[in-house]
Length: 570
Image (cartoon, rainbow, N blue to C red; front, side, top):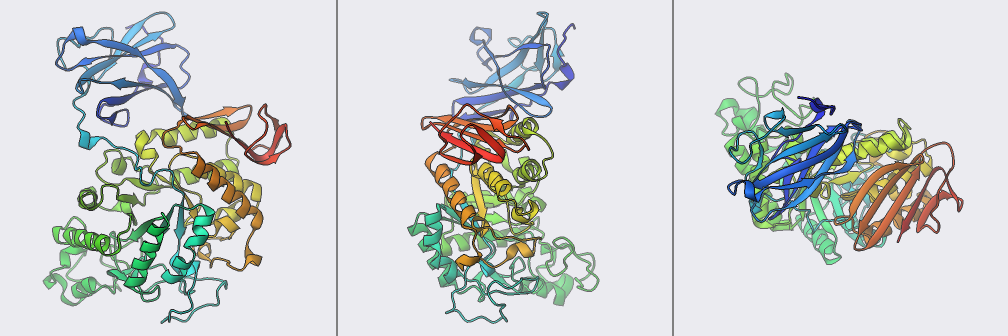
């Protein structure tokens, strides 16, 4: 076999993120090759109807769509009247040598017409397997709220000793934020341009964060009543604001009556197998049971147990029927059984075809996302990491950042990317304002990328007014409703960024991430026109040919200055 192509770098899988249906008759096919392979002259796909023979055979060249740090991604979109195809890739090097790539590897010849063995296949496009962007959620800007710290309605009595609003917060402090307070600020959020709210847990628990659920489906008295949550949901929907509720199925509170029954009765409890216990009965002192992290006050649920799984499916249905949220955020979702998430997915789809399941997964969530039967979305901390490394740490330049964004995009099927919740800050990390040393230019540059990256941008409460937070406790400070504590410069820019995103849907736009003269360039083309964004994360000013931006920072009319950006629609 004579070929100058880097053959070991070739990669493709059928029925995966490298070959999948975009609709009932269209498939996107991707071939990976070594990045910048100088010897690869042409890549094509030869395909035919699986049962139609060589007379049906077609050949289409693949286009180099984008690159990451390791690979070039060659792609084509195929319209398939017959949705059962077999295919091989034909590769030509710069000397005219041709080889074929299939499931059997690389060869000089192929015999697709005589056997289906040594080929790739797309066996059948089943409509129920096609993943689409969630149009109900698409392009909405979300706003994450930590209920105890957002807004306090003083009419609600509180069982805890409260700190003065705005005082330093601690692990065990309570500030008294509640659901009525959140409801009173829906107008503020609409004015900002918010289209959805993600609420940290509101269910009965003993902590200020409520991730230790004592009673699923019942609002914690610190936050109000079940009726208050119903009224908040109604107010959101009246204002076209979607509502995602945080659900904690990975673990519960050690004070939950279910776990307490096991503590009292051990193996005699009907709930013994609902937990992962090493011994006759759980002991808080011994810590002889699995828990969230290393926190014995939050014992881990065994969702592999049928009784446990059925209980949480029942709870999920009841919460939907009672409060009518638009989605669930699933805490520690990557530690729970895939089988349970599949059951939950289909249970909620029966109630609402557009219901969104948002998993917490700080890493590559492909196994939960790319087959459309578990999560619809994750909190995209992969994006968060890239934004911090590029804008704050200056770890690499614009070319590497474009490659990394392309690599992040390639993790998931394209429709999935439009469902992901992209974030800069959350309740679990140091706020970016502290991370960047209170450099507002860096802070705003990173937020602009979040707002103008495909998916669901999620603003953490207070980020729009420059609320700081030096760790994952301090990041849960009280919202500074006193305007003296608000950064109006940041607010103005954040609001304008949201307005641009709301005016230019990205879900149907063709995107491109690349480097240009040291600048990071992100561009979109759609029936709504074009959108161009340029960032300068260097220490030098860089001249550009474009003029008259719709939004800019550190732009002098000819050049983008350090830590500046330029946004233009046309």
